[in-house]
Length: 410
Image (cartoon, rainbow, N blue to C red; front, side, top):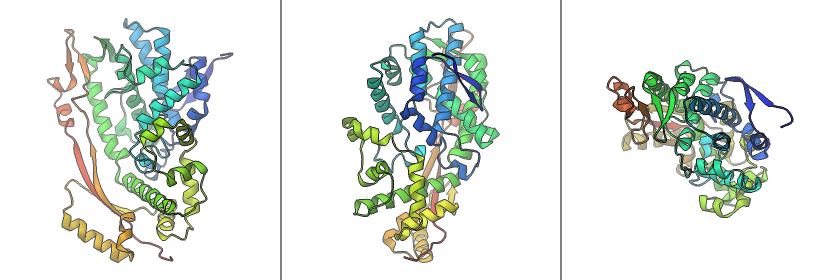
């Protein structure tokens, strides 16, 4: 680079872009698209400051990865310059497959296509464009590189991704309970037998990290109002897809129209690079533009949900620890049909029920602690950390979500 490129990040301060290749990737349209996809989808309906994007998160994760690798080098882990750059690129691109509104539309706009698989396909596409320069980042991302600790830093229960998004989401939402000691965790990281480990003296920072993540899920990611808003958006897209596939035409972007008209599967993306490029033209703005147009649509379902969405007149949601009985669900459905005065076949657009779950720690993907005696043990086995054993339990909450009223001018 002719001059050193620096970004000013609100969480970490100045971040240096360390190489020409990384700068070129950041400057690429596929990566710049992440500026137009919010990190937390619809969470700003609850926390107005949560307007940060996937672009912010990716840059922040790259920065934390560089600090982590520098720390590991100081502790004696040999990391070549090629490995260093590759690890930064792998974490930089780990979320590039996210579609509009991040997780909210992952399984409704597309059919069972997880963003991780799309990220992999996009990295492969970029690798072709860059003449194979992303071979090593790709191997790290796919966990095909022989030095496995690099992949753990990209994807595990204590990866750089989580260290950044917890700090960043805490910062932008103002939820102080999500505060973690990321600097200390990184300082306590080491590599033993090709596995990422945490020095024993950092064990309480890990306990705080797991606790904070669990709290952030209930207070932010799975906040009942966020769940309600996301269900509304999913129902809106489902109705739009139904109408489009029934022959209705919408004034929407070409890319959005394609995915409304067609049920794209993972196999379709794997066999058709043009489909992937079409997906990469789409972001949050495609959806918002359509919602603003749909607020006056003749179809009462599309019109009502769009109007409610734009004015934050969200579905009423009840969240409980105990599941609703079949009788309760049937009663609530009948009550909703009567109150809204809608045909029973349209109820599913204005009523939904299900469950959300959360856990603090999954033992099958262990976090390793390096004891003072040089032994590697699972963090849940630490004698004085009963909280982590408790956090291993998956907690489930059940919800019923329904529209409060409608404008029934058909």
